[in-house]
Amino acid sequence: MTSPFDTPINRIGTHSVKWDMMQAFYGVSPKDGLAMWVADMDFHPPACVQRAVEAMAAHGVYGYFGDDAAYLDAVRWWMAERHGWAVEREWIFTTHGLVNGTGLCLDAFTAPGDGVVLTTPVYHAFARTIKAAGREVVECRLANDAGRYEMDFDAWDAQMTGRERMFLLCSPHNPGGRVWTAAELRGVADFCKRHDLVLVSDEIHHDLVFPGQKHVPMPLAAPDIADRLVMMTATTKTFNIAGSHTGNVIIADPALRAKFAGKMMALGISGNSFGLHMATAAYSPEGAEWVEGLMAYLDGNRKLFDEGMAAIPGLRSMRLEATYLAWLDFSGTGMAAGEFIGRVETEAKIATNHGTAFGAGGEMFLRFNLGTQRAVVEEAVARMQRAFGDLQ
Image 1 (spheres, rainbow, N blue to C red):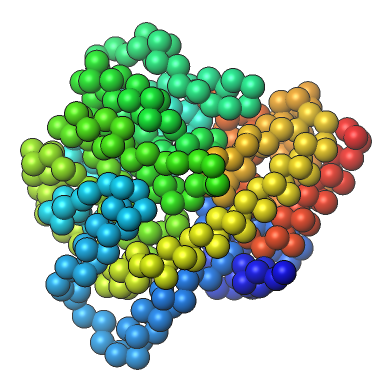
Image 2 (tube, one colour):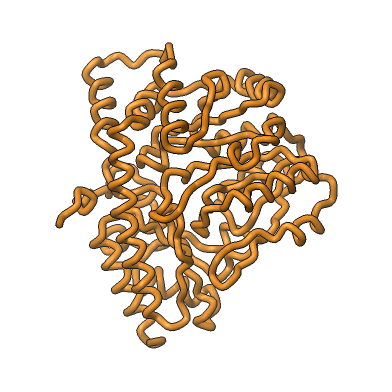
């Protein structure tokens, strides 16, 4: 049975970073290459989002956005309905995406020279933003236990120097695809209490969870740490509207909230009308139904890719519990990174994210974006099997 997600969409020449910049970054031409790097999907968003944009265009006036009650209530409804998390309107700040939210948190809650803890390998923009802000990246490596990331609190405790001020958590984890358990999240909370760290929990992938898995929002796992907890969520990853640059920083604690509000005011940050209308439309029953269909489709892509990679000796894909970003381990091939990257980019003509960008522990990995048509994943598997055919 054909799925609407199977419909090919030509993104070349649309100012798509993923497709129009792949040759500049990876030497892979969009004419015959596959773009499987940047974390956006090759799918249309739900029809309710498209209708919201069309209504704006039909009206034809694009002035300042006011009266955000419907938007805030849509955020509150989604968090309660989908995640069992009660959020108040006054807790919600709207930022220009969550990388912007990360930068604002660094500015509000740390000072130049402070240490910021990352559990590496982890989303590459975190380290880039921390360094650009003049803070120190403190890499606490995740333990790779037979192809599954685990937290190693004893090792991390030993690394702390007292200069650390913030812990930046990726939940669910990108690129490993882990859905952290309530016990693991409780461990993170206790670690932050032991070392007096502000905990910023980036939960942008919280809707992209596969069957059999359950995401737990940090406030539910550790309700006693509200005085040090900052939550970050967004519609952008879930509904493939990253270009809207709209995210939420959600802060329950009044003191933390006042600090963050001051920084927002000082920098003149406010939401853009297109993103707010799109997000309001997305956080709806129609949007929820679309997400269910999306995850069923991505589950098929995940299984296809994992089975295809398992057929190549020396390659191993971490089993995704969440996200559409496959994390492929090449360490079993015995190849140096330059060789397996060359095979992927030059022979298979696939653009992927290099594991080194994600920090310590990522050196022997590449990240593949599976948020695309099933036929593209099938082609990627075939190309990989040809490129590494001498191992079979």
